[in-house]
Length: 238
View (cartoon, rainbow, N blue to C red):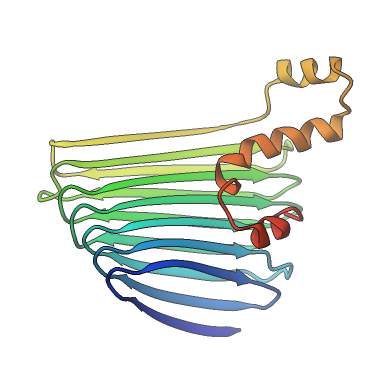
């Protein structure tokens, strides 16, 4: 197993696109990122390891003042992914988008922990999961809002699609709110594709395989639409 620790300190007034691609190896990665004032960061993470071993990926990110941080995470293998971000400044905004897909007997576990320690910040976390065969996905989303985090706006959305009877998705959204002067939304759905939609598409002359492909593309579009072309080409095999 490769044990890797990364420490990234992003200077103030930085505009940066950070791309990480995890390929065929077994690893335990722990990354700490500090984003300093007035920075705009786009962070793309692609994990498409084909080995059977379970990989562990951890991120701990500190958000200072006037930060815009967008993350796209896409994975298709046996992985435990733990993401924690902490607002230590004000007037910052983060958008987290996570897409997980499993097949055969694969298992994925994701945990997103967003902690609001300061006021006037915004967070939006979107998690989408797709399972097939006998695979399993467990996703936990946690939003912490402490007493000093007034005027906070946050949203947690978790959506899952099950493509076979023996696969499972387990969503666990959690909210810890200690301030009433905030706006906080959360939702969680798990299901299969609507039979009426499937029947309608069949009447338009589309076969079953292409129907599923089209519906999966529609389901994942909100996550993959803004990723760089080099990563988009790789995601076609997911």
